[in-house]
Image 1 (cartoon, each protein chain N blue to C red):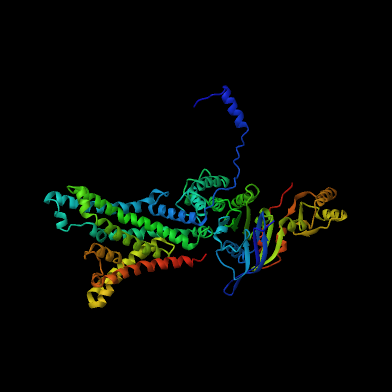
Image 2: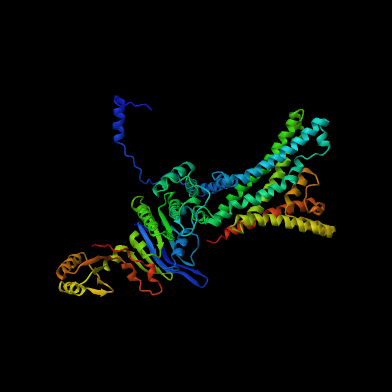
Length: 314
Length: 314
């Protein structure tokens, strides 16, 4: 630290300071007030931070980042296997042998995304109602529907990140594992829009399901257990019915497996037929029905979610 | 001066239950107390003004705007709920910054307002600790801070002293008072505690079974009805005699002598009577439970209206 006391400049500065009033009292705010849009954006950003445990203690970060890490790891393993096979048996062998790739990622790792939605999703809605913080939102310049849509978009953003990132890692792994990365990308660029579409289908569906169930309880744990239960029971029922009921009825009953709707889209996008978990019979339904089923299973939970918040009692 | 809040024949029914019946009152600048027992309609009135519920009939103006359906009005209102409303796992600084943004403030201003506000409520040192570890008194301060962080024109407080010990109550009421005198923000607080309202408020609105039974300046209520009580060790009869000779109307009540409707001059006369009667004084002071005397409703338990502690002179 330097001391310049005694110099004329410092004296002047000191005199200047004397005239200042260090008012530490209350100051009125007359800056901008950006109203509803700022409020929506704030709830959205807060939703992102909750999902990833940012600004919270270390424990809040463990689960989300564990999921992200494992999801990426699976993508990495897919890439490594394909790379190793190509290296040992010659380029193109992996593709020829139909080794796991973009089309198979959600079949294998889909359960991880469901679990992520079940475990992390309720965190965006349940604590606010459990702690009563929702009352503080409702008296601010936004509506309950603004609030829940902002939360929905926030979690959807995170789900897109979790769904797409491993696919991007896989793509990078496959490209750099190939003898000519540029050539690989040229030949396989169509995988990119495909996995983006399949991943988006996955993200929107899981977000809607996860948050809709969370809207029925103030306990995050109940919501998580409820969601996992729904998936398992519907899978079990669809699987059991699939074995006993045959024909068209069986095909339709195959739709009730709640883990399958986004996988229908995955199959249709990649034109494969091995990703469904339990409702395999539904594979024989016309494409239009399978797409419609996806939209019904996605939009109904979103509608329920918004409806619940519209009538939120205080 | 324009009223901050105005209720005109404001009525709210919950099915057959009457929460508020043709309530007619105004809230102007200053601190207004909404006094009444549980179920008198205090919370209902606050929720109506915040636009959380809509009235069965009648109308209300909030900050000059008809009804509070308009979201913009809420940017200038603060609300401190009675019940818990705070998240556990975030720090007060983080929470307030977020809540300021939900009220429409841009992020940088929100951050500095959050720090300022926490200093004003005396939580500057602890602001980076998670709220879950705060004491009840500290949480009450955070609740007040979040109602204050966006510099509202009016703050509505629902039972701000609920659940606090006597020390915490004092601190809270001082803060409420300071919010008006130093920050220039008007407040309306609801309470079932006579002492709280008497100490803190400039004006008072008394609700009973959903109806406004009294309203006016607090000083107006108390001045008229001030009572002095005197306790003497012995020679009580002589003291009473001396008082009567001096023309002071006095009555015996339990172990004390009560001088109802006393003025400033009566203190001199009392001291004269004490000297003349040679009665040793034990305690003397104004008994300011005056407000409770305007309630002659046996349905309201007396214990709720604790008199302010009388000053003691030895």
